[in-house]
Amino acid sequence: MEYPNQSGFRQQAGVRMRGTPGDPRDPSLLFDDTSAGGDKHDLSGVGKGPGVCPGQALISDPMSNLALAYGSSLASHGREMMDKNLDRFIPISKLKYYFAVDTVYVGKKLGLLVFPYMHDNWEVIYQQDTPVAPRFDINAPDLYIPVMGFITYILVAGLALGTQNRFSPEILGIQASSALVWLIIEVLAVLLSLYLVTVNTDLTTIDLVAFSGYKYVGMIVGVIAGLLFGRMGYHLSLLWCCVSTFVFTIRTLRLKILSEAAAEGRLVRGAKNQLRMYLTMAIAAAQPVFMYWLTFHLVR
Image (cartoon, rainbow, N blue to C red; front, top):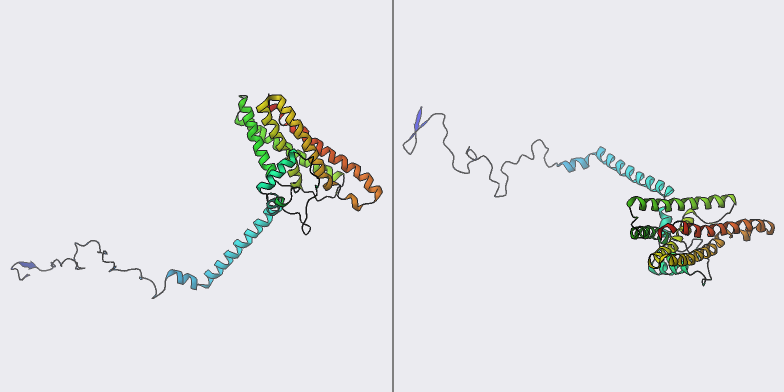
């Protein structure tokens, strides 16, 4: 059946008239016009209760709050356990003390290692039964100079090998691992000797590492002198540094190893003092041996 319209044309039944532009019934508009800022067909509220968002639903859930609190407690407990176990094997708090240095301390300590003959007072300063930080006491052991000395020694060794056309990454790695292994052997030997002699001292393993690592300063001086002035310069400078390191080690460890003797009887003190003095001399005498052993092949 046909219906007449105002324009004079006839429209068949069942056929709709095209709407005006912007009419939601217009099939030519495939996408809604959102340029005006409003979403005409907001479906975000479909399937949700009135006025409830996902965050509020999660917060209001008591089981979620319980799980959140349990997770936070478990994370903090795990962090405490990790810090406790890490501090057992690597004493982070103690290591901070050995690296508490400044530029003034490093300069004075290097001068003391090379010229220990004019220094009189070798006792470590204590404050409430705790030694003060190294930057406040030149006699306190530190790990900054030994660590930097070890790294600098490896770099200087690579430079010396390079000037002789003997440098290679493998040889430099062997040099570094050899120096590290000898340092570990030295510290373990000293610990065993202190145990056999039954010396009760406040020396720690880190202290022994520090005192054993001070010899790298003299080794660096010897190798650099050898590079600049040949083998004669190497031997003379290394000899001076060996004697200086020997004197420094004896005067430093003597107070540490013999500190227990004052509290003992005269007979016991006399017998043990000899062993302790021999042990101190042996530790000090081992320093020049290692200094020569680790450097003589670097200068030709």
